[in-house]
Amino acid sequence: MSVHIGAALGAIAKNVLMPGDPLRAEWIAQTFLDDAQCYSTVRNMLGFTGSYRGVPVSVQGSGMGQPSMGIYATELMKDYGVDTILRVGTCGAISASVKVRDVIIGQTASTDSALNRLRFHGIEYAPGADFTLMRHASAAAEEAGLPAVVGGLFTSDSFYNDRSELCMQLADYGVLAVEMETSALYTLAAKFGRRALTLATVSDHLLTGEETSAVDRQQTFSDMVELALATVERASA
Image 1 (cartoon, rainbow, N blue to C red):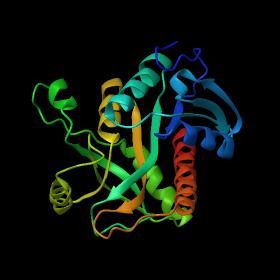
Image 2 (image 1 turned 30 degrees about the vertical axis):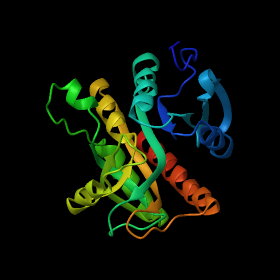
Image 3 (image 1 turned 90 degrees about the horizontal axis):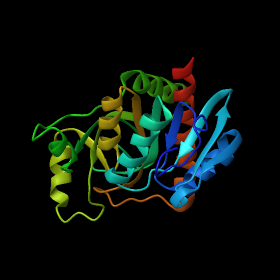
């Protein structure tokens, strides 16, 4: 039993989907999983375990930002032996090569956080996704006809950033979108020798100002969750 999750050993599956919002975790469990049971209500950061087409799957809220992701990802991997984590969330596009409602399959994660600089004593460690998960996600998206793009993400510590021009510079170097959790997730997966991948739906576009409505986000989020589950199913075969 860990400090922040508090679930009994064996209550969490080896495959975990992680949205930031715990209520989204509840919605995913109730909508997509069979026989979902809640294993944690600690700090209202809800977690559930069920199955998808016979594959055991858990859904755990991560909260917002790298420190919160770091807490929950560490405990899932270290205390509960979780093998595979797929972050399912939203991002803001900073590149003209992607559109609102696209799903970005996060290959790499640049960051403005000091977490890895402190961890590696000034070395700019470059965390990346698990290649097998990325390959399965790309293939599943192509088969389903979903608009998915493989590329780099920018994990920012600031939601309200006073230096928006830095995002545009990153876009010049091929980064597709900004979000707030992936760098920590990929770093911890490397530390513990586990698999991790971010699937992030483009909910708004920093270049065009376009945003999705609540209804659009719900529908596109459903597509992304189905893609994540298809990826887990393929990786578990």
